[in-house]
Length: 330
Ligand code: UDP
Ligand code: MN
Image (tube, rainbow, N blue to C red):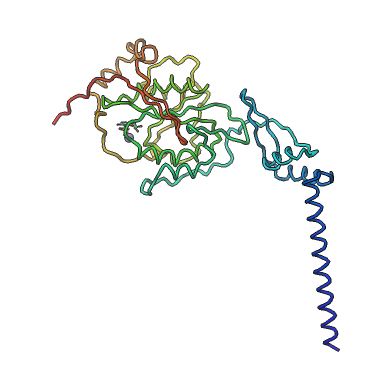
């Protein structure tokens, strides 16, 4: 008796499984037909609903610089367009990026002991474009920011800088480009001149409206420290003072990351050759009011040696025609 019942139950289970298989096969066939013959409009509607569920924006940039934005998943859109579905893709302009980016994490752990390679940095930042450029894909940033770094023989520091800064800038939703202004030759290192040159050269590359100057060995320890320009002119004035930067400020936005103690981690290093402190530096700063009229952008002389776009940054090598290094004392 119980054997008979067991047999019946087994039979029922088998039938149920068979039925399930059939239904599954049927559904798969309908999907298959839908994709390849586009006959079943009902499924396109189903897909459209999926779009809003995914709720992602994506951009199609046109050569003239304008871009179209679509709601949905890029793969969906591309495949549906190929198949000429009756999809109603919601066109929606990208919103402006929020003043306070939502994905920031605050305090960061910064260390310089791990092995760092440019390949690793590249792997970590696949969405950074050639030349070290990036813009958020889900919103429009208010400014285009050029990040300018004076540079010579600091490749090791640069790897760490890029490793930390690219992800921070991305979280900050900044539209940016990274520019290394590399001093050619072994003459006295002139950081201020490199920055002035950087300002001129990056504008030949793109229309930036904000300039951030950073040392290659300075890493922010908190990603709430935003790498963009602020609106109050006062802020720029402070940046200028600290910097000893002598250039006309008309209509120009310049920002320098705030370097309050504790907020930045500096890579420890020995003083570089040919970057010894200038013995005339105090007199020079006192005379700024007089010299700034002749110095700086207006009288900037240099030779552009090379511009090269690398995956994580743009390198601009310049010959600034510096006098030979001062003989070191002792
Ligand atoms: N710098 C460089 N090579 C040099 C000297 C300086 O690349 O030989 C750049 C680099 O970006 C560095 C910045 O200039 O972070 C400031 O120089 P340094 O680090 O010597 O200044 P300090 O450590 O005294 O602030
Ligand atoms: Mn330093």
